Length: 464
Image 1 (cartoon, rainbow, N blue to C red):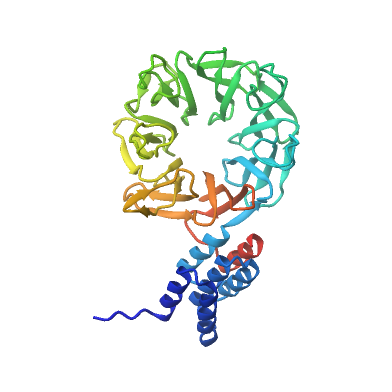
Image 2: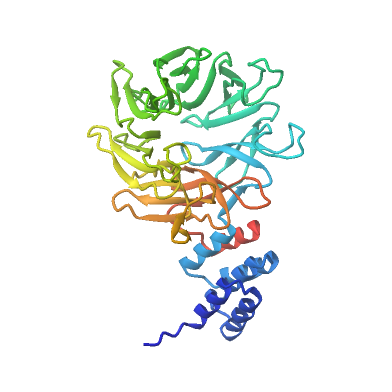
């Protein structure tokens, strides 16, 4: 039986063979015969894009967007253009978080060469900024005089907290990321900044409690010790120990009622070198703050990390590293993690996303039905029948249905690489994204629907 490919498929084959000029001629002829063929317009634009003719790519995609293309073509266009850019990718942006109502985003942005090395990157100081989720009304609340990081909003949106390194705390003559940060709070109504926790302790991972009255954080309070979990009262500045620093703890989260604290902890010498440190496997724990009783949700037979509560606080999603996925003979940070969910009462871990690919930054959507996460391309590279997966290849943003375990791409990783996806209460995600010759911009998309024709036109005009 003979199989005859369509003309469009023939053109795609030509393009996939890297015969760009021939593909451009082929799709141009298709368009001349049918000017409303949005498929031909898209593939013509892709041929121009692969030839690195961005002017023609933009011109052709704008024509395509006017033809009301199908969802698969809209997805293909956003793979080339990315989604709505709300903060320029000429800056090095990071540490973004939504406000609780989903209306604003707080982030750190490095916009000048503060260390004098001729570049703008993660080694430069970043100011603290706030912007509306639609990209309007950007406002700087703290300049880049200091090294600022890990910013977030209070539940009512009145306050912002962030870490800031302002002194040479280790005595090496310079102020950099090796120095201890203080925890600062900024009143967005009065414009007044106050220090909540001094840099006499090494603080990390500050988050507001659900009632907004305190900030929960991890801290090393003595040199050579472990990081305990603490809370600090916003008004009185009084610090309370929540989880003792006998072990090393991180990534603390507080339940909605303020009763439980969720965290990862290293408690056993699983590496077998006679000491307990970050080379050992961590487990996920919950401490009841009323009576200090501890629930171990996962075993440290595997390395489990970055736990997050579900919206109803009945489940926890976390990363679990369980296999030597890169074949180097050991299980360590260079191996991939699977994504798991555990019911707090039943304590029955269930794999949601396998460790076949790189996965990170897993979190629930606000309806609790899906997990959004960062992942490497869901494809195979083959060299003599051996599958090759690169830890450092481009990353995209994915969503998985918890019940069916079906994955879908939210942000493609073919032409851009992304990181740090954040889920809003309004059904959107914000994330950092970049490609060759750009720094890290902040982009946003609706989780459940693609851009409208007018939104798509705006994205093409802005991003190309």
